[in-house]
Length: 329
Image (cartoon, rainbow, N blue to C red; front, side, top):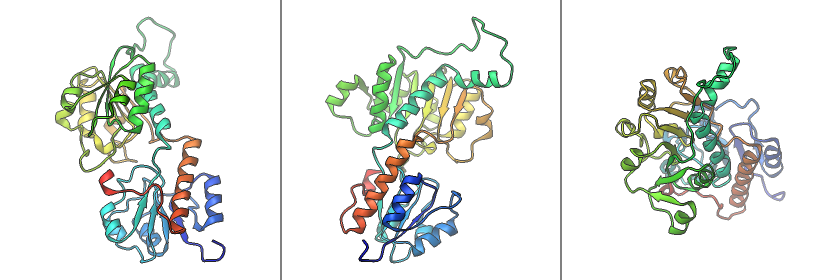
């Protein structure tokens, strides 16, 4: 690299220090100084001058923004697994490769999903708010009664890496594992997880105590849990989403939660994030988190290392290991 000009790499958000330091050593790197989400104009300027752009989920790289890309831009090395914020077709048409960081956040996200299941079932958010408000007057036999999860049925929507990791955790908590997926998983995996496959999502939803959303956001999964499908859920059911907010009709979910037609929800993602429906925030039977399902020090560093490997292999004239193919999403 020292014998030739280093590629200009523009990073849109603040990354872990160890990752930023290594990127500075390897590339001609421009870092984010204040960690603000870039505007469309700032993204357009970055695409105009950079050889490689490193965006995150907060950067909307649609066809209009990508139209500003200069001829030297050949790689978008996404910091994250999901790429629904990038117009893959527009990138491909402009000869821009897209990479992501799969696999490294599986365990972290599965941990958070399990945590949300427990938090919603046992009303942890409500209990914590009661303490902070100074309204707790002492233990009572009927105070803050939640729901036991042992013996309940968990329906996993999306049995990829995270869905399978969640299933392994769920078995330890005595949950019966069910799943719906675009394709049925291998029989050995199904047997290991003791998981029941449902070809019909509708049929599964109507029979579960807990629903976990673990599928990516694609045109096919937008409002996968539509108003009609939310209507199938039991009145005391729990729904947890650590995937993407767009997979659920959030307005209808809010309405049904407020009317007691769905028991509770644990949400780490939102349809219009960072904006959250004020009606949703006012509900006591909802646990809300700021998209922190993958937020561990180890996970963020692993993501950054994958980004560096993808850039380095690309610059060296090889195919990056984590190329994104449109048909994958």
